Image (cartoon, rainbow, N blue to C red; front, top):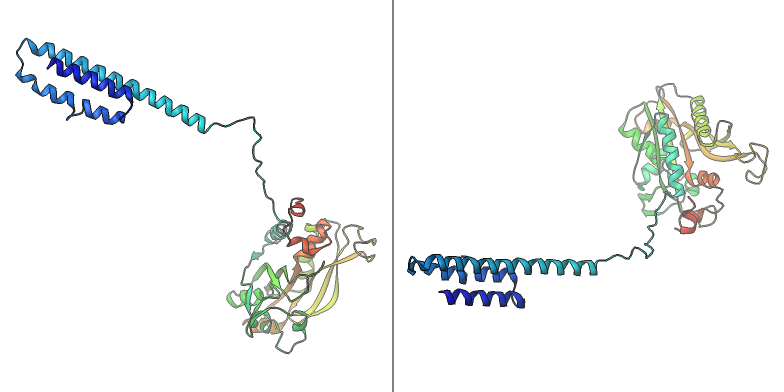
Length: 337
């Protein structure tokens, strides 16, 4: 048995040193419950009383030698694995890093967020609706029947005879008034579409912010006060507005609204073409027919509406002279904001 133990020791140490087998497999092979050393020790019962302590001590020495060799080999393998990892995953801190480009808000979004803050601060809710709209909501319910000449100025893209890409967010007036009873106080920002040729001031897609207030006793003075507050918040306390008579099918009376030129303060310059005023939006009192269509009694309730072209405001805010820049995704342009 002594010779067998020494043979196991020599073979185990040789196998461990050679690295020919997996170290865990060798541990099981020699020291496991069914390992070679355990199999030898099962014959201890056949030994004499004098032989047992001698063979027992030798067996412990063999076990300790094998365990020590295995532990040493495991530590060596772990060290080699770490060295390999450090070599493969090393980082040269002297090499310049890859700069992470940080994006920023689009100029249209910058001004739109300001407008939302202004009107939310005045108690307005923000309404959203479909860009693919029924003819009824886009035209009919807004007092623009099939043969109305206003349709010529709002020529749009037709999905079919009854479905269009909306030409204005005014369609949200109808959707809101159909589902909510007065008092109503909303703005409806969003994309709109018209069949316009692309140039420096026109695009088949642009953005509009529609405003609507309906309640008892709403008058033109409420509209003027609202727009004055909005303009002063946007352009400063010295900004002034003026109303010019106009016609919109869904408002009566209607007006074009100008703001005093924020460059020359009304004195006249190239920006305002010497007039001292710049047109920014259209507005008016909600037409009684529009209220009736939505089930609101015009004898009890009245309201005002206004529509703001977002691109127009942004172009004047940042002194941009070509509307196409908003949609070309040119980084050289966008990173300025």
